[in-house]
Length: 161
Image (cartoon, rainbow, N blue to C red; front, side):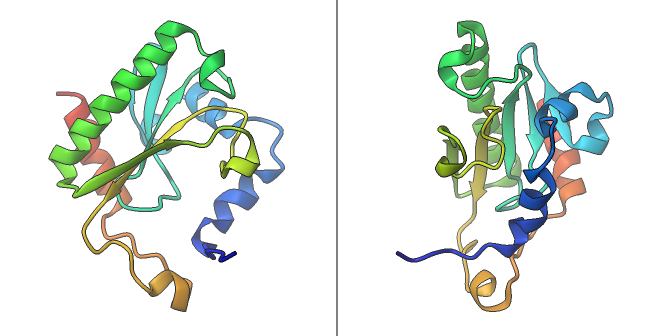
């Protein structure tokens, strides 16, 4: 079995490994959206930039409710969860001119790959032609080509239109 070494994620994994409080719940409860990079709040979910992105423009759709799976969410929450995901797809394609997107959930605990398995959230990962390269493997470096603050402002403006 081959393993992908991803050291750029270590700060995030270590910082949330021993917390007693859910970082997504804490983020949602704070009212400083700009500080936390919350792009848009809806009735049941919010859209947030991933602070430790796999790629530029990596956003997450997060329900306010602290639930671990889709089946635990009320139907109206699930419906908004998917509708907001579709909106994210549309906005990311238009605003960031992405070549593709990876959209996914990590369900089933840490074995499924999630670092916060107790609070469901959906990742939307923009893909750009040539965004994978040798840097992470050879030099412990992940290149993120866009500035987090610039992407935040651009996406926030687009969501508010």
